[in-house]
Figure (cartoon, one colour):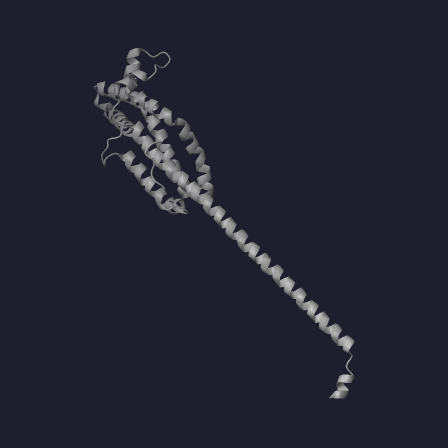
Length: 239
């Protein structure tokens, strides 16, 4: 045994041990670098997930608030009573007599009531693109349907007076051959009146459509809107 030890080349042995030690250190450094890289990737993924979650929360909350505001806006502009001071404020159109202005005034108040909401409504219309980018077509289309209802009400208010005149003209015609035209004109008038004025009852189709669209948006967005908050977003009473 003693003779074998004497024959060992200690310089070569020590050099080999040093090489092994250096290799081990290099491997350890490599492993440490891999661990750091993996940790960085995980942190980046967490950061991106948090950023996307924050964006979804902001868009969802904005959309729900806008939906509630549109619902309140429609209640306001469809109020079934046209007050005297409102009708007095309806401006005359070019070439319109005072009698014609007064006949139009009960419906002209709809546009006056919409005016304070016009700027906010334009911003809501622009926000639909962000909504589509984050939540897709179904949510986007439901929100656009709400916006479209406002336009339908405003257009109905502009057309209801001419529809009334058409119905009156058809009603004055004595021949039974005009009965179908009278029925069509009367139905158009009633449909426009129902769009313009809220009834405050369960028969109000516009209010039911609005409620259904808001409920659908709540179902899709309320969880996202509530992320990071202690409670779901509260409904705004006024714009």
